[in-house]
Every structure is written in C-alpha cells, then in structure tokens.
Image 1: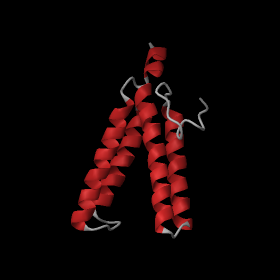
Image 2: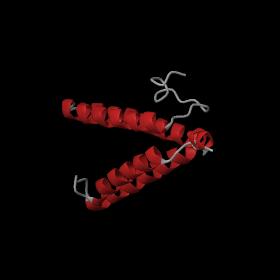
Image 3: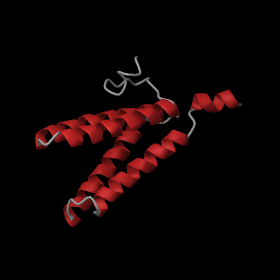
Image 4: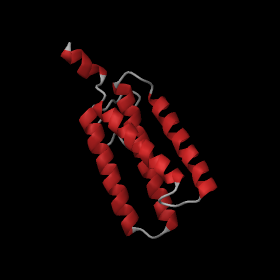
Length: 128
C-alpha cells in the first residue's frame, strides 16, 4: 500500500517506522493549524477534526504494529484520553488554558514523542 494512502485506508498488515510516523504527525499538526485558521464553520471544523483524528489513530496503530503490538490498543488508548479530556472540559469549561485541553495536548505530544523514539522490531533485529 502506498504510504500516502495508508493514513486514510487502514490495513491490518501496514506498519510505519519512526521517521515516517514523526513526519506524518507533523503534517497532521500543520494541516490542523492551517484548516482551523481558514475555517469558521463549526460543522467544517468538526468534520476536519474527525478526519485528522482518523489519520492520527491510523498512524499510531501502524506504529504499534511495527513494534509487534496490537493496533487497536493505540486506538483504545487514544479514545480513552479523548473521553477523559471531554469530561475535564465539561467540568472546568472549554478553555485553551483548561485542564482538559492541557491533558489532551500533553498526552498527544508525549505519545508521539515516545512512539518516535521507540525502535520497531525490524530496527531492533537489524542491530543484533
């Protein structure tokens, strides 16, 4: 499968190594920033965020598969983080400085960082 199609069309066998995973997450982040700055419609923002979430979950699942883990573990973890963030936003309000937004952003950054530095099975077997 083409690496350009893999974030959109998931495959159970597709994996993603460290650098393409990091590059894809940077592209997703830049696309989010650009789309949010150009769009004022609430419906368009919601649709775009769901597309970006889909791409983020697919990239993380492919990275988990590269480390010989189950891809759905990443998806489950991401959805749990989002639900916790939503609960925190309901309790303290939707504010850029609120604990819900901070929790979601910090957990996403930490997850991308850890998955970007953790070698996959192919990379580990090549060094031994």
